[in-house]
Amino acid sequence: MYFIIRGFTVTLASSAICYHTCMALLALFGCLVLAIWAYMTLWFLLARLLQRSDAVDTAWGLGFVVVVWLAWLIASRHADIHLLAVGLVSLWGLRLAVHITQRNRKKTEDYRYVRYWEKWGDNYWLRAYLRIFLTQGLLVLIISTPLVGIMHSQHVDSSLVAVTGVIVWAAGIVFEAEADNELARFIKTKKPGQIMTKGVWRYSRHPNYFGEVIAWWGAAIVALSMGQWWGIIGAITITILITKVSGIPPLERHYVGNKNFEAYKRRTSIFVPLPPRKI
Image 1 (tube, helix red, strand yellow):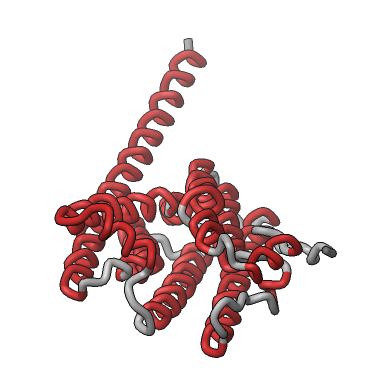
Image 2 (spheres, one colour):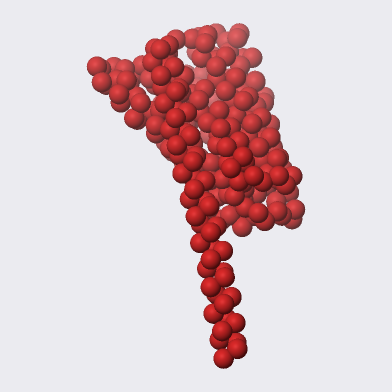
Protein backbone atom coordinates (compact mmCIF):
# COMPACT_ATOMS: atom_id res chain seq x y z
CA MET A 1 0.00 0.00 0.00
CA TYR A 2 2.86 2.38 0.85
CA PHE A 3 4.44 1.95 -2.55
CA ILE A 4 1.08 2.45 -4.31
CA ILE A 5 0.45 5.71 -2.41
CA ARG A 6 4.02 6.83 -3.00
CA GLY A 7 3.78 6.07 -6.71
CA PHE A 8 0.47 7.91 -6.96
CA THR A 9 1.94 10.92 -5.15
CA VAL A 10 4.99 11.04 -7.43
CA THR A 11 2.80 10.73 -10.52
CA LEU A 12 0.52 13.49 -9.31
CA ALA A 13 3.46 15.79 -8.55
CA SER A 14 5.02 15.08 -11.96
CA SER A 15 1.72 15.80 -13.69
CA ALA A 16 1.39 19.10 -11.83
CA ILE A 17 4.91 20.13 -12.84
CA CYS A 18 4.26 19.12 -16.44
CA TYR A 19 0.99 21.07 -16.46
CA HIS A 20 2.66 24.15 -15.01
CA THR A 21 5.48 23.91 -17.57
CA CYS A 22 3.06 23.54 -20.50
CA MET A 23 0.91 26.44 -19.33
CA ALA A 24 3.98 28.65 -18.92
CA LEU A 25 5.10 27.75 -22.44
CA LEU A 26 1.64 28.46 -23.89
CA ALA A 27 1.55 31.81 -22.08
CA LEU A 28 4.98 32.66 -23.49
CA PHE A 29 3.89 31.80 -27.03
CA GLY A 30 0.70 33.82 -26.55
CA CYS A 31 2.69 36.91 -25.65
CA LEU A 32 5.01 36.38 -28.61
CA VAL A 33 2.08 36.00 -31.03
CA LEU A 34 0.58 39.32 -29.90
CA ALA A 35 3.96 41.06 -30.01
CA ILE A 36 4.78 39.85 -33.53
CA TRP A 37 1.30 40.74 -34.78
CA ALA A 38 1.76 44.30 -33.50
CA TYR A 39 5.32 44.41 -34.81
CA MET A 40 4.41 43.32 -38.34
CA THR A 41 1.39 45.65 -38.39
CA LEU A 42 3.66 48.60 -37.60
CA TRP A 43 5.99 47.58 -40.43
CA PHE A 44 3.00 47.28 -42.77
CA LEU A 45 1.93 50.83 -41.91
CA LEU A 46 5.48 52.06 -42.56
CA ALA A 47 5.57 50.21 -45.89
CA ARG A 48 2.24 51.77 -46.86
CA LEU A 49 3.59 55.20 -45.99
CA LEU A 50 6.77 54.66 -48.00
CA GLN A 51 4.96 52.78 -50.80
CA ARG A 52 7.68 50.14 -50.50
CA SER A 53 6.61 46.59 -49.68
CA ASP A 54 10.22 45.46 -49.46
CA ALA A 55 10.35 47.13 -46.04
CA VAL A 56 9.17 43.72 -44.86
CA ASP A 57 12.61 42.34 -45.77
CA THR A 58 14.19 44.59 -43.14
CA ALA A 59 11.51 43.55 -40.65
CA TRP A 60 12.47 39.88 -41.09
CA GLY A 61 15.76 39.82 -39.20
CA LEU A 62 14.63 42.31 -36.56
CA GLY A 63 11.56 40.15 -35.88
CA PHE A 64 13.77 37.44 -34.41
CA VAL A 65 15.52 40.03 -32.24
CA VAL A 66 12.10 41.03 -30.87
CA VAL A 67 11.23 37.38 -30.18
CA VAL A 68 14.45 36.48 -28.39
CA TRP A 69 14.49 39.61 -26.21
CA LEU A 70 10.83 39.30 -25.26
CA ALA A 71 11.17 35.57 -24.54
CA TRP A 72 14.24 36.27 -22.41
CA LEU A 73 12.48 39.01 -20.43
CA ILE A 74 9.32 36.96 -19.85
CA ALA A 75 11.12 33.72 -18.98
CA SER A 76 13.66 35.63 -16.86
CA ARG A 77 16.57 33.30 -17.59
CA HIS A 78 20.08 34.53 -16.82
CA ALA A 79 22.39 31.56 -17.41
CA ASP A 80 25.31 32.04 -19.81
CA ILE A 81 23.59 30.05 -22.58
CA HIS A 82 20.51 32.28 -22.43
CA LEU A 83 22.59 35.45 -22.61
CA LEU A 84 24.67 33.96 -25.42
CA ALA A 85 21.52 33.15 -27.40
CA VAL A 86 20.26 36.72 -26.99
CA GLY A 87 23.63 38.03 -28.16
CA LEU A 88 23.91 35.76 -31.20
CA VAL A 89 20.38 36.47 -32.42
CA SER A 90 20.77 40.22 -31.85
CA LEU A 91 24.05 40.26 -33.76
CA TRP A 92 22.60 38.24 -36.63
CA GLY A 93 19.29 40.14 -36.86
CA LEU A 94 20.74 43.64 -36.63
CA ARG A 95 23.45 42.93 -39.19
CA LEU A 96 20.95 41.42 -41.60
CA ALA A 97 18.55 44.36 -41.19
CA VAL A 98 21.32 46.90 -41.86
CA HIS A 99 22.55 44.91 -44.87
CA ILE A 100 19.08 44.66 -46.43
CA THR A 101 18.24 48.32 -45.74
CA GLN A 102 21.44 49.51 -47.41
CA ARG A 103 20.80 47.21 -50.36
CA ASN A 104 17.17 48.24 -50.89
CA ARG A 105 17.55 52.01 -50.50
CA LYS A 106 19.78 52.13 -53.56
CA LYS A 107 17.24 50.53 -55.89
CA THR A 108 13.56 50.54 -56.79
CA GLU A 109 10.95 48.15 -55.37
CA ASP A 110 12.06 44.50 -55.44
CA TYR A 111 10.88 42.63 -58.55
CA ARG A 112 8.98 40.08 -56.39
CA TYR A 113 6.68 42.77 -55.01
CA VAL A 114 6.31 44.49 -58.38
CA ARG A 115 4.81 41.24 -59.67
CA TYR A 116 2.38 41.20 -56.74
CA TRP A 117 1.41 44.80 -57.54
CA GLU A 118 0.57 43.75 -61.09
CA LYS A 119 -1.28 40.62 -60.00
CA TRP A 120 -3.33 41.97 -57.08
CA GLY A 121 -4.23 45.38 -58.48
CA ASP A 122 -6.58 47.50 -56.34
CA ASN A 123 -6.59 44.95 -53.51
CA TYR A 124 -2.82 45.01 -53.25
CA TRP A 125 -2.38 46.48 -49.77
CA LEU A 126 -4.99 44.29 -48.10
CA ARG A 127 -3.48 41.19 -49.66
CA ALA A 128 0.03 42.38 -48.87
CA TYR A 129 -0.89 42.76 -45.19
CA LEU A 130 -2.35 39.25 -45.00
CA ARG A 131 -0.13 37.31 -47.40
CA ILE A 132 3.22 39.08 -47.00
CA PHE A 133 3.43 40.83 -43.63
CA LEU A 134 1.34 38.56 -41.41
CA THR A 135 2.61 35.44 -43.18
CA GLN A 136 6.19 36.50 -42.50
CA GLY A 137 5.22 37.18 -38.90
CA LEU A 138 3.88 33.63 -38.61
CA LEU A 139 7.09 32.25 -40.11
CA VAL A 140 9.17 34.27 -37.64
CA LEU A 141 7.27 32.60 -34.79
CA ILE A 142 7.65 29.09 -36.24
CA ILE A 143 11.33 29.47 -37.06
CA SER A 144 11.94 30.93 -33.58
CA THR A 145 11.01 27.66 -31.84
CA PRO A 146 14.63 26.84 -30.91
CA LEU A 147 15.00 30.32 -29.39
CA VAL A 148 11.79 29.97 -27.40
CA GLY A 149 12.87 26.49 -26.31
CA ILE A 150 16.22 27.78 -25.07
CA MET A 151 14.62 30.64 -23.16
CA HIS A 152 11.89 28.43 -21.72
CA SER A 153 14.25 25.72 -20.47
CA GLN A 154 15.67 25.83 -16.97
CA HIS A 155 18.00 22.95 -17.83
CA VAL A 156 21.43 24.45 -18.47
CA ASP A 157 23.71 22.05 -20.31
CA SER A 158 27.41 22.57 -21.02
CA SER A 159 27.84 19.21 -22.72
CA LEU A 160 29.67 18.59 -25.98
CA VAL A 161 26.32 18.74 -27.81
CA ALA A 162 25.56 22.23 -26.47
CA VAL A 163 29.06 23.50 -27.25
CA THR A 164 28.84 22.04 -30.75
CA GLY A 165 25.51 23.80 -31.28
CA VAL A 166 26.96 27.17 -30.26
CA ILE A 167 29.96 26.70 -32.58
CA VAL A 168 27.72 25.74 -35.52
CA TRP A 169 25.40 28.66 -34.74
CA ALA A 170 28.24 31.20 -34.67
CA ALA A 171 29.91 29.69 -37.75
CA GLY A 172 26.67 30.02 -39.74
CA ILE A 173 26.31 33.68 -38.74
CA VAL A 174 29.90 34.47 -39.75
CA PHE A 175 29.61 32.57 -43.05
CA GLU A 176 26.39 34.36 -44.02
CA ALA A 177 27.89 37.75 -43.14
CA GLU A 178 30.99 37.07 -45.24
CA ALA A 179 28.86 36.02 -48.23
CA ASP A 180 26.69 39.14 -47.93
CA ASN A 181 29.73 41.42 -47.62
CA GLU A 182 31.42 39.87 -50.67
CA LEU A 183 28.25 40.29 -52.72
CA ALA A 184 27.76 43.90 -51.58
CA ARG A 185 31.30 44.81 -52.67
CA PHE A 186 30.80 43.08 -56.01
CA ILE A 187 27.51 44.88 -56.74
CA LYS A 188 29.23 48.27 -56.42
CA THR A 189 31.39 47.58 -59.50
CA LYS A 190 29.47 44.90 -61.43
CA LYS A 191 28.59 45.29 -65.08
CA PRO A 192 25.24 44.23 -66.61
CA GLY A 193 24.98 40.44 -66.81
CA GLN A 194 27.95 39.81 -64.53
CA ILE A 195 27.67 37.10 -61.88
CA MET A 196 29.45 36.91 -58.53
CA THR A 197 31.77 33.89 -58.73
CA LYS A 198 34.57 34.69 -56.29
CA GLY A 199 35.19 34.16 -52.59
CA VAL A 200 32.70 31.81 -50.96
CA TRP A 201 30.48 32.27 -54.03
CA ARG A 202 32.98 30.15 -55.93
CA TYR A 203 31.84 27.11 -53.94
CA SER A 204 28.10 27.74 -53.61
CA ARG A 205 25.57 29.69 -55.68
CA HIS A 206 23.77 30.72 -52.49
CA PRO A 207 26.34 30.77 -49.66
CA ASN A 208 24.45 33.42 -47.68
CA TYR A 209 21.41 31.14 -47.49
CA PHE A 210 23.65 28.22 -46.55
CA GLY A 211 25.06 30.23 -43.65
CA GLU A 212 21.58 31.19 -42.45
CA VAL A 213 20.35 27.60 -42.49
CA ILE A 214 23.47 26.39 -40.66
CA ALA A 215 22.97 29.06 -37.99
CA TRP A 216 19.43 27.88 -37.30
CA TRP A 217 20.53 24.26 -37.09
CA GLY A 218 23.12 25.36 -34.54
CA ALA A 219 20.34 26.98 -32.48
CA ALA A 220 18.28 23.79 -32.80
CA ILE A 221 21.19 21.68 -31.53
CA VAL A 222 21.46 23.93 -28.47
CA ALA A 223 17.70 23.60 -27.86
CA LEU A 224 17.95 19.81 -28.19
CA SER A 225 20.80 19.72 -25.65
CA MET A 226 18.44 21.49 -23.22
CA GLY A 227 15.67 18.94 -23.70
CA GLN A 228 13.58 21.11 -26.02
CA TRP A 229 13.19 18.62 -28.88
CA TRP A 230 10.48 20.70 -30.59
CA GLY A 231 13.09 23.40 -31.25
CA ILE A 232 14.07 21.43 -34.35
CA ILE A 233 10.81 22.60 -35.99
CA GLY A 234 12.36 26.00 -36.67
CA ALA A 235 15.47 24.57 -38.33
CA ILE A 236 13.41 22.25 -40.53
CA THR A 237 11.08 25.11 -41.51
CA ILE A 238 13.84 27.53 -42.54
CA THR A 239 15.62 24.77 -44.48
CA ILE A 240 12.49 23.96 -46.51
CA LEU A 241 11.61 27.64 -46.93
CA ILE A 242 15.02 28.58 -48.31
CA THR A 243 15.76 25.53 -50.43
CA LYS A 244 12.28 24.77 -51.77
CA VAL A 245 10.01 27.82 -51.52
CA SER A 246 10.98 31.49 -51.29
CA GLY A 247 14.76 31.55 -51.07
CA ILE A 248 16.73 29.75 -53.75
CA PRO A 249 14.01 28.79 -56.33
CA PRO A 250 12.93 32.38 -57.23
CA LEU A 251 16.55 33.50 -57.62
CA GLU A 252 17.37 30.53 -59.83
CA ARG A 253 14.37 31.31 -62.04
CA HIS A 254 15.30 35.00 -62.15
CA TYR A 255 18.63 34.23 -63.81
CA VAL A 256 17.34 31.72 -66.37
CA GLY A 257 18.72 32.69 -69.79
CA ASN A 258 21.72 34.55 -68.41
CA LYS A 259 24.70 32.93 -70.17
CA ASN A 260 27.14 33.80 -67.40
CA PHE A 261 24.82 32.31 -64.79
CA GLU A 262 24.25 29.14 -66.81
CA ALA A 263 28.02 28.56 -66.99
CA TYR A 264 28.33 29.33 -63.28
CA LYS A 265 25.46 26.94 -62.58
CA ARG A 266 27.13 24.04 -64.37
CA ARG A 267 30.29 24.21 -62.26
CA THR A 268 29.02 25.44 -58.87
CA SER A 269 27.03 23.67 -56.15
CA ILE A 270 23.59 25.16 -55.64
CA PHE A 271 23.69 25.22 -51.83
CA VAL A 272 26.30 23.27 -49.85
CA PRO A 273 29.78 24.71 -50.55
CA LEU A 274 31.77 22.23 -52.65
CA PRO A 275 34.84 22.41 -54.91
CA PRO A 276 33.86 23.72 -58.39
CA ARG A 277 33.13 21.06 -61.00
CA LYS A 278 35.34 20.90 -64.06
CA ILE A 279 33.46 21.61 -67.29
